[in-house]
Image (cartoon, rainbow, N blue to C red):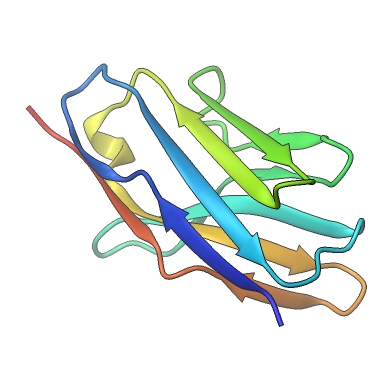
Length: 117
């Protein structure tokens, strides 16, 4: 069983930076893809960024050039560095682990990011 715990959310002004962290417990497989999703009030949950065990990344168009995802396999952590934050980045951010081998999704409880002046 995998558990994911996010941290690092908060209230910041537009243009500021935040770094989100996700700590995983349990066995992590080399085929596991990890990533971040977000859900704003009234909206569907959307993909922000993903990273494979080997470090290949994807980003939503809305965050390209501003967000950077990274992963430390030894520490079982995934970071999301968010720069130049905009009010439209306001959402609850969820850490995700996709166990490709079995098609299983694991989710954290989320951390709130609010970008407002």
